[in-house]
Image (cartoon, rainbow, N blue to C red):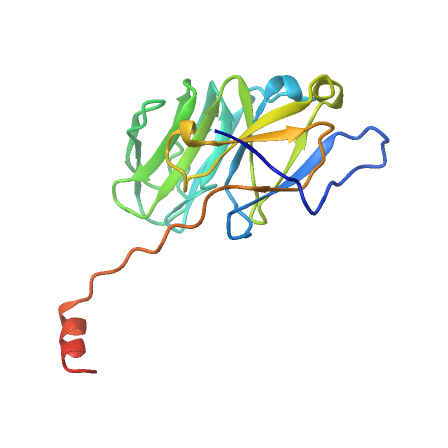
Length: 223
């Protein structure tokens, strides 16, 4: 479903050049809060420069977390998985776009994986259930990941965008699902102006932890 978004609180940051085309957007959830780790997908024909696989991308493991948690790469990119923790990790994925397994290894190893199919690859660690990461592998589009403030800057080709009345972006976040088909479609009128883009998502409710036998006993006693 295409959602037309009213851009508000214009926050475009232009350089001193008269025809600057870098647009900065802030992705917010339906509660008005900024959304980090959202991936904004843009047709490559609308960009002034297109990324091509160059060198290796790094996804580290720090404090039992994948860093960055969400990565957007081009199809054919090789990713290095160092381990900066002082404990071993076991990295794997069952995703159709790239099933793989890196068996238990320490900080002395830097295994590599080449992502040769487009789609979303969900990363996990067999040893630490709380370690979850995502790799968005792009082919005909390019992805830009929002920072901790929910913002992302995109170099849009003004000449290309002015040939049409609207341009279409797609925005994906792990709260939606692990399938790119769940990405929200955003239609922006041209000429493009930066601003807020609201996603129809909100943080998931925290899981209710089962009370221990001791806690249940104290509750029965009215403590």
